[in-house]
Length: 163
Image (tube, rainbow, N blue to C red):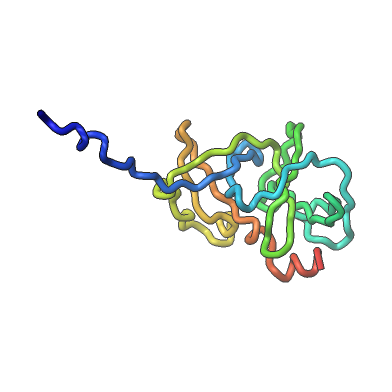
């Protein structure tokens, strides 16, 4: 009699995955690793601060913490888009501080096999790519760039703005 044990005596190879939150900025899709996300809030009241960099929308208070909100479209030097209706803020960890990344919309949480996350494209480092740590191709065939919250502001800017 043939042994059938061999057919069942294997472990399916576990795939190493990274989990991302996908969001939209100026009709382009970006992602951030979920371990860097604290929460998502609606952009409502914020306080503008004189002499802050142009890409800082202002400060918000969330759960008794003051958080600088980065207008990611401005940070990436995208044109103003008057059609943006929905604005939310993705509160992220940036070192031992928290910052907010303004987004037009949040799409979904997606698991991506680690081997499918490609390195950041080697193009002009002075362009928005300095904020990008990698990219992957979505199931729709569109590229999705992975943003690093820590790279959105320099440590010096974080210390000056958030103390």
